[in-house]
Length: 98
Figure (tube, rainbow, N blue to C red):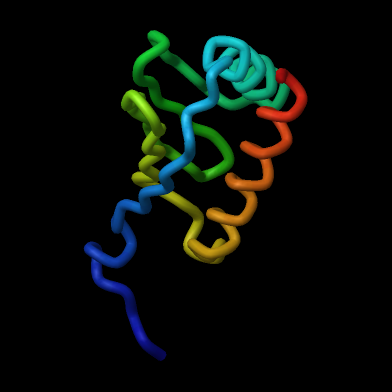
């Protein structure tokens, strides 16, 4: 059985998302969803962080995009699945608030 080193377990995962024009509306929607799902989400509009369900991470706003960095994730959940789920959620909320 292969064991993971601490570096592999604590590897940061980055996801880059296009910043929508209606960023404040999208952020309000994310905040509402987080609260309804028991996720601890704190932000100041230009950066923030969240924890819940074995995940921890933060985001930073840039002029054209947002970088989400996961600093902790459940071992059993693949990076590909996380990326797919985040991108699907992002597409959905951007469409809902447009």
